[in-house]
Length: 301
Length: 301
Image (cartoon, rainbow over all chains, first blue to last red; front, side):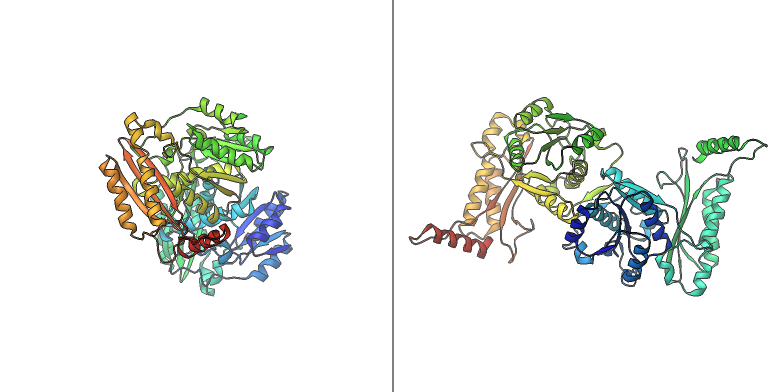
């Protein structure tokens, strides 16, 4: 595995390696990141991981300075996972001049964007730069950052980037907490409390899957439970998976997204709502599958 | 020469043609466009011309609808010039979904941007899309659209696009008028008047090259002359070539940029200021050249 820091050496190394698959990260890798590497390796392309804590996507007062940087440990994990190349530029290599050109994404003031002004412009801009530097055939992003994944898929379509975007399911601890580098900020008592976020989202998703359509009440119930346990809730919202907007008559799939703070630590999570199969009379598995698919098509996809 | 309208057929055709040079145009080609094709052909790459009147860069009330569309004549000229491939998508091929992702460029409210809100975001966005579709090794733009050229060079640097940008001098009619598709809008009397813009810019550049440093007075003189002959002047500005901002102590090269309307027609032009050599005593040409270079380094580059 090669570790490169400069743009010129990256381009030179890639000339003999393409087509490649890119795994963009901010480092401090956990099992979720390693699963991304394994997922792209299964596709057969050489794998390139980038490690860059991007100042452009952090707001004033956010955790850019204290974000954990663990390059040596990251490289050891990537090498063990079979990664072929690591690109770990410093800020000067990524931004040799002021970045006066930025990508302006839609939904930039919605969901996490409402609480992190400029965040998604910073994400889209650095990912576009990484795409242009690496020119991958494939890139992978996790569903943990659901809005980010949604936006980057749209960016690839709308900017005609010749890149296939893979999605990875959220990796979770045994108690359900979504893996995140920011979990390291949690004190022991906070870590014990943290899985409540996913438990509540999961329960709300189950109620909606079972037929609940009072989305505002569902959002409110999760919010109230979190607040009662000391969380500062930023948002809990039921949204259309295809638009990330409020559900409409045309909605065919739902996702519940949430962001909340536990002490100093901001956690996000989400869950896609998959409707339960309708009650069935005894029948073949095939019939059940057909019913499930048709219910999904009818209501939520 | 192949003429393609669809994105998929373009990608397929390019797979066997790269590396290519791209000449982005809005069609209605004149000698200036053909000179661009000839300039990139001299570089040895197969040449791809795009013809697309991009709605995203036209404001409400601008001339998107009446912009001249002359595809058959354009293709005949391109074929005669040795162009290898023409990509002429319709609006639906370039924007199959609403373009909610846009490139936000700097200086978007300066110079032409002050009079054409959203114009440069539209230009940068469509050029980025064309770059990603064609993936050229080289692309060429004319100095006629000086701010556009400046911005696109910066976009390529800041987004790490692996594309070399060539610049072409402005092609002019015998009387000095910069060639432009919009010249076709001019009535006969307006066409006779139109070369005044370049004559005045040229005279101001000569005065500055000879030592004039009262830039505001120079701008005012050109503006007044144009107004006296019936032009509606949008701006006449002396700017730093390296920043397109007002000149400072650090300025090493100047350009004068102007936009003005003659009747319904908006014309733009510009001229780079190259200082005249200082008065010389008799001496070798080499000495003169040295003096000229050193004066340029000292004052304006």
